[in-house]
Amino acid sequence: MKQWYKTITFLLSLIIIINAGFIIIPVNALNEDEITAPSAVLIEAETGQVLYEKNSHEIRACASITKVMTLLLVFEAIDNGKISFDDKVTASEHASSMGGSDIWLEVGETMTVDEMIKATVVASANDAAVALAEFVAGSEDEFVYQMNERAKELGMKDTVFKNCNGLDEEGHLTSAYDVALMSMELIKHKKIYDYTSIWMDYLRDGKTQLVNTNKLLKSYNGITGLKTGTTGQAGSCISATAQRNGLSLIAVVLGSATGNDRFKDASKILDYGFANYAMYKPEVPDNIPDNIDVLSGMEKTVGTKVDSDISILVKKGEEKNIKSNVSLVENVEAPVKEGQKIGEVIYKLNDEVICKYPIKTANNVNEITFKDIFSIIFNQLVQF
Image (cartoon, rainbow, N blue to C red):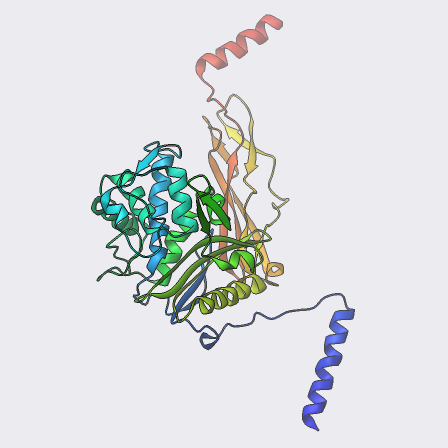
């Protein structure tokens, strides 16, 4: 009887809430046992904030997700002008000897950097990855050295790379968290999405078909990439990136028993993120003055400006609890340079600072000099 009473009371309360025009949805926890993979993590792609983790620093093999770092170095080499998408890459004997997933490069065969990237991303081609590595660094060994140095720069403390494609090799290890870090860095290069969004394409004038190994492209709303991997030591792995309503997430799953398991786990983790978090764009406080006083300047005031293009990651429903506070100097001493920081807007959630952004000067103001004063007095006397 008590159970029926509780159920009816809950339903009546729910009806009252809905009729009032709103409904509060609690943040649902994602239990570890709901994720079958031994290691996983979910981060927000702009801030790197961890939203969910399960043994995220456990040291594991990651198979072809290794290629995320390979692709990062390739894109950085392109940005630096060291190589270009149109450059021709010739396959060496070493590159052609790779096993596992490949596009069967023959020794001396030539493809563009663009085509090699496409093969690496879409088909997870080990031979194409090695060819790119050799083209960027001269040898795979040198490229792997650069991979490890870049990993250190990104704070990937759990990672040691032994090759550039992820084939099983003793000591070639990382963690779900480190994979998320390098994935976050790679997707800063928006061009990567041109490749990770490809479902099917062709090389060699249509003779070689490429089919994306990331099956979430066909089944998950908002998926943008990024990379799958499977080997005997690593199991089935994925770094999955997705975007919805301005929120960009990265879900990493390592060590799944099957390919389908990794896709299910990645989907569950992403679902959790999108269901419970949002990017909140706060309004600029209206108590920021348009100008502040300038001391000893050629002008009495200087304009203010605020970079309002900012978003804050919050749990859904918490945005109403965000409060803002303006800290601003009363005046500034000349000379004043445009863009000079004169204050900041501070956002707090439940008395905890979650974000700050600067208030700056909108223009230059020169310091007044004796010559300027003499000129002003002289002009006034002339007018008199």
